[in-house]
Image 1 (cartoon, one colour):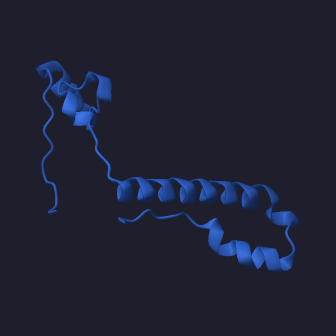
Image 2: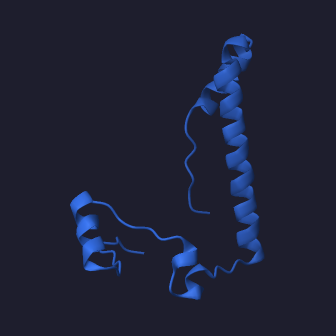
Image 3: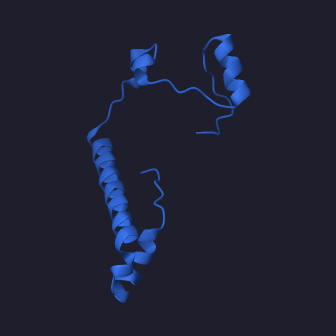
Length: 95
């Protein structure tokens, strides 16, 4: 996919003026979409497996960071060495 250079949002003139004045965009909740198929997402088994793996890895990453943040001072020296890489931020990448 190429770089997206334009985003279209259909709304009233008043709302358009507010969006441009505040340099913001409006993101509606799916329940406010005018097309029911906008939120109709179909997954195959591979997608579900990838989504599950991402969710589990993300949850484990958050849990590990909390443990390190709250208990790092109590770690033994070798535990601190192991924990150093886990202090960073995870980067999600396309599967």
